[in-house]
Amino acid sequence: MSLQLNVPLTESDEAKARGVLWDPNLKTWYLPQDQYGRLMEVDKWIPEKDTAIILSNEVTVAHAERPCWKCGHPNKVIAIGSNYFYEKDINERDEPVWLEQGFFTLFQQIATVSDNLQTLLRDHYPHYSKDYAKATGTSYWNNHCETCQQVQGDWHLFDEPGSVFYPTNPETAAHILLKTFQLKYAPRIDAGYSYGDHLRLITEFAGQGSNY
Image: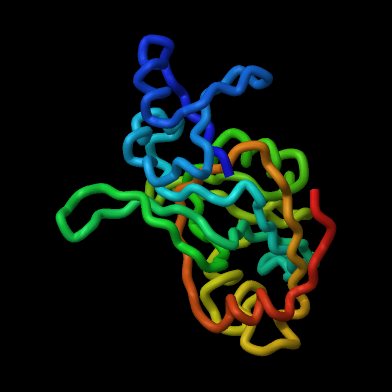
């Protein structure tokens, strides 16, 4: 779970002193996982400044089916997940910290995605892309209908009990398929997430697809 960093040449010695290593094959700097206790020391070199979550480099993608709310076409929809992740937060002394969260979750209202995760999504899930909402002035990544291209909003996929990513029993959780994609470096996102019994049902009863 190494974290790719953007270190200017003039700061390379400083980065090395903070546990950062150089990848000669990809010609990039990275922080190895055994140095994640120093995340705040290298925070200024994280490429996307508005990403508050660092995922595992083994990215989970949950698959389900749901008819389009507009045209009725049966669509395959996805959700990005992770078995553990790091989240940037504020501690009791009002200091920014990176905290390890050791549980499985699915992410929603994803506003920012690092380049390596964008490549994965573009290659495997072309109907999952980013939209700009004029009413709120915000942009989020969404599933889209394969036929009419209409946004399939997160509320109808995640937040209603009984929706495809909010199973209420083992039978509905079993309709979800989890696939794992191995990335060289940990992807970063800015997103919301939840926890609860529906996620336990997914980890226990969802099907397991091939790893990539």
